[in-house]
Image: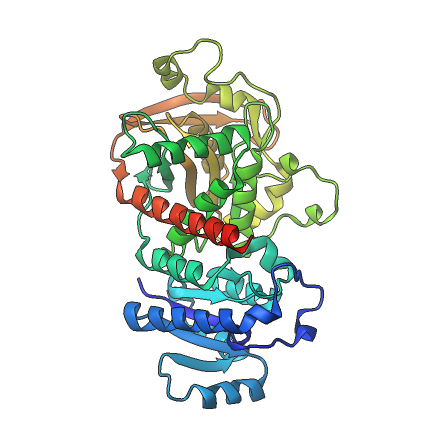
Length: 427
């Protein structure tokens, strides 16, 4: 899927007006190298336009600079130039086509434009980086890395798995979590082990970025997430939130322009109590206590119900969204096996009247089915310790598995290895 790539005009400059970047991080900025980088970046854009039919549009709030650039590049049909306001107006008129949009820049205003468009935000790290660009952009360290990442965006249109749990609920998984017999080769086996280390032992930041960018690449090619109004994640057995899954969720939430409840504007609230779902009481880990896989499969949501609740700070927002038929939720978790946690949260959200629920797990331990269990809940899910009774059980077997997702994750890994090689050369 070819993109419309909106680029800040500063990406064509050989010398920046640093007054435009007040308070920015200049650690990756080197003015003496900027001209060479700019020329390489232009070459990459020409390739993306000529070979992949992407549209390249430069924008700025400075009319004089736009006119100068138009004149200089008047023979280059690949480049178009317009004002920031016209870009915003175009995006607003075509918001139903936002999966085609990508914004490239290093300023907070570029981030704001991407959020308004609900589009991907790529940050070229050779420019000075303003605060939100540092925090929420997809960072690329070189023009070649940028080029390769856009190619991934154009071609990425698969998740490893997708399953329709019921008429309201869909579950996606980004990778195959099995690294033994099911791995295609040693490279994939190593990669999945590193993902496990990341999610269970809080290790490699590189693999966190690979997962995040894989998800963002897929999200930018679908509109399934555009109407999500609340993001949350499933707490661990110990009541804590996995740091990397939380950062992952928070990154997506910010890019989608979804705010937290107003009371969280004050400082000091622990992240566990900012989350939509709270585990009020620790529970035994599913893999602990000598339980077999078949025993865990038969457990259902009982232990989850006894220890989970919906954060009461979200009640006012949920009530308003439900009244407007916009109570659409996305829930993240590290892994999905039998779906016990997802089942519990799904039933709790449906009890509150959710219109649409999307579950995203980083990895899937593929089993023969998703064991969908429907419950009747009596009591207040905002307070916990409610009563529940299973009323229906159904084996959902129609996983849509696409092995091509493994190749796309491997391609992203190669992009990060390219970055590391370039860093080694620079040192």
